[in-house]
Length: 93
Image 1 (spheres, rainbow, N blue to C red):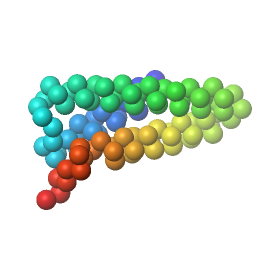
Image 2 (image 1 turned 90 degrees about the horizontal axis):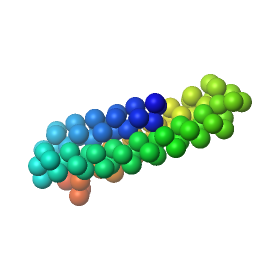
Image 3 (image 1 turned 135 degrees about the vertical axis):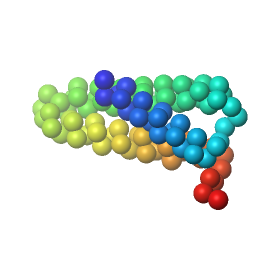
């Protein structure tokens, strides 16, 4: 469940960044890209949370929760940093 939430958060933040920068070809192309990128992020987060809860969780639940949350935050940050400005497009000007 936490992996799915991480994927949805990443998709929502990336969509907002693209909308703010007015980047992309059109809505359908952006939607398909978000679907593909979001699926990858979700699978990566599911693997991370599964590893954290499966290996660390039985020994220390608090450490597993902290590791899962920190890992998800890093994944979403990297996801937005890499894909937030496609092809180096700078929307700050």
